[in-house]
Image 1 (cartoon, rainbow, N blue to C red):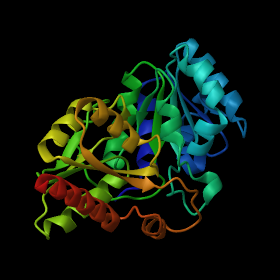
Image 2: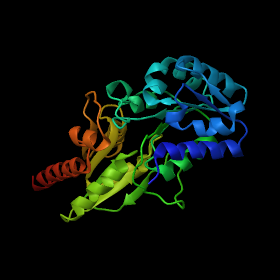
Image 3: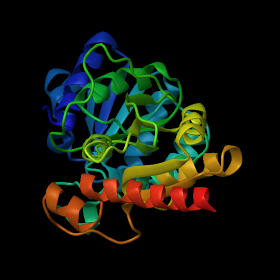
Image 4: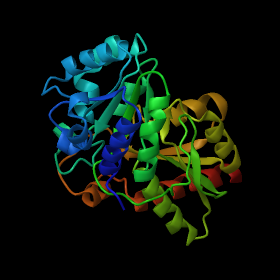
Length: 315
């Protein structure tokens, strides 16, 4: 396993070697986000902005207007809530080519507690016009996503997980913005997950398989634009949908999936995520367990949806 933030740092460094227009801005957190890898090799293209995130977004917008591709790195709570106005007006409104990297996402933020846990960042960023939102599932997907978002012209918000997480993809995997990936086949229900919750969902599917419950797992790493076709096809095939995300159940992946289903294929579903509460300090395992987001909780959610499906069938 590789820490996802280390994969980001190395991918950013590799990108800097390939593309001289890539510049990096940081808000005094380069060692945490691993933007330090780039800074050490390309100090002339690295701008330490200090704890002045609003100004940093304005500078990034200016650099984009001059033909550069700015990667703006800081903790997700600062990259979304603190700079929302600047991102909206200075970056998204003119559709500038700025890549915003939000590190230490959701509950899993290295024991930093509620003030540093970004539990609403997806909701904020996907509501902004022109913004692409990506939440990679593992180190390999992060490596590929860093380069893919550079090829996309326009603003992107990329979530960066702090710690090591189980490997899902090999280097022959091909990440594409707006496309999901079926990481496990199944027919009774589908779990649609993003970020680190994809690996938890795979664990849940394995548990359910022992009870002869066949579950498809989809890695929906691009939350905007979302892969509507994959959602509708899986919903029609299984008639039971569960979403899993390291984010508030309001406004994130679960809400995005529900919006698609509501318009295209009404289906029984349940959302696993942070249930509209603030978090606290703790280890990743402790937090997933306490806040009902572990593989066991995902498996329970699948069973509940299947029980509702069975009851409707009987009626």
